[in-house]
Image (cartoon, rainbow, N blue to C red; front, side, top):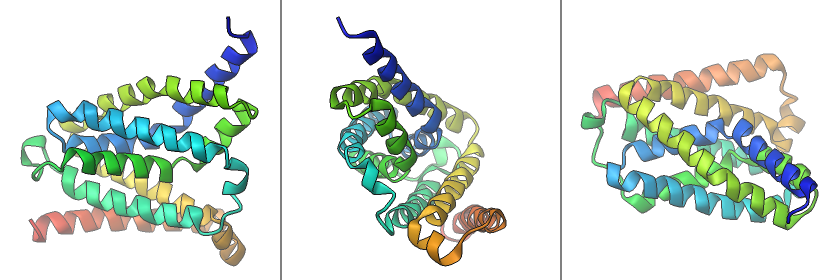
Length: 220
């Protein structure tokens, strides 16, 4: 029988995943929405599972992650690129969405976007696992069905209310801006204040949503 403290720490890891994985579930849902229904579960499941495996490896290096310059900056830029690509694939009603991407393309989007946006998750989980690799693997694997459920629920909402795609992309823009401003290089050079953070978030949201509208109007 597993010790009680092991189970409690594992549960805390699952709860951390659920509390911090809202943006991850959102980008997963946006990537999976353009897939045919029969491939959607495979795309979400494979992408999340692969991301969890890679996250286990990265969590072992969590103490060094915040000291790696340009890591969060590059991740933020990548999230912006993902948001732009997904806006093109996912805007509009499902029957007007462009030709669905291949399954492995969606899995690729899900995996890399999840990892790019998981620095906070990784650091929190590393602390909760207390260096116990078995506990880390247990907690992360147990969180997979919860993330898949949340992603599938968001897909249904996005299909029913297509305008939510723009809200989702706006949230990704805010996440990307926060990642860029949290990078050690950005902090050292700009010393970002709350005002600067709000300004960057606003610019990125307007650029993504406004640029997406122009793209739909003139390049479709």
